[in-house]
Amino acid sequence: MVAPYPPEPEPAPRRRLVLDLEPWTTPGRAALIAGLIAIGLLGLWMALDGDGYLRPLDDANLAFHEAGHMFYGLFGAGPALYGGTLGQLTFPALAAASFWWRRDAVGAAVAVAWLGQNFLNIARYADDARAQALPLVGGGEHDWFHILGRWHALDADHAVAATFRAVAFGLVVAAAAWLAWRGRAALRGAAGT
Image 1 (cartoon, one colour):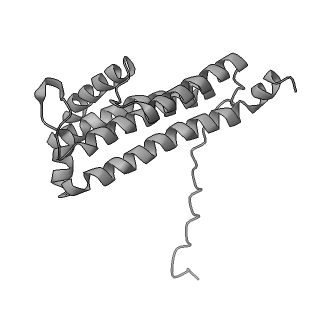
Image 2: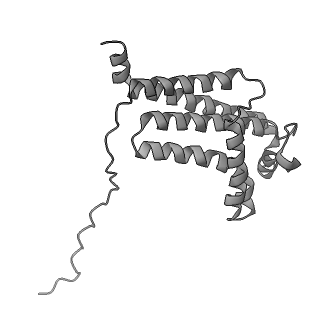
Image 3: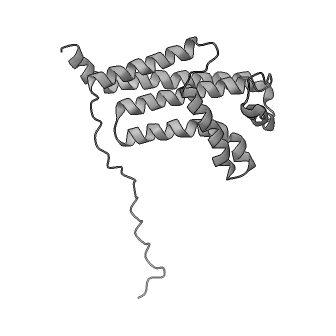
């Protein structure tokens, strides 16, 4: 006798992506302390500085912003408009990913703090969408005026900026806290325990 239907095939085994990464190394005390001081000073500068421009870091960030317009512009006019902001976020995010991949806690934390600092710059730019008082490179057009205008949300420029500011400070605080947690063994060793 022949079965009326063929038997059900076995379900395919689920595939999982498994990253074979080395364990995190404990940072040396000097590197840990230097990283924490750098992140702390960056956070302090972000909180207290009036004009918000930190040379030479923001000179590099500006170059990444302009490069982002060109790179993402390869994919069309829409991506070109967002490309400046994306460029500012791409470079520190790639740096953080690279350090994470190599299991370098100090480098990863500093790169995440740098990412946060870029969010503060983006907040400043978005906050200026209606006023358009910030000096622009080459006197060009204001990205965030066009981005928010495209979404009919120009009147939300301050709220968008506040969100970016919160993300900025959250990333810097998280980077410092995570680095301190990762380096707790090195800190205990520095205290003589």
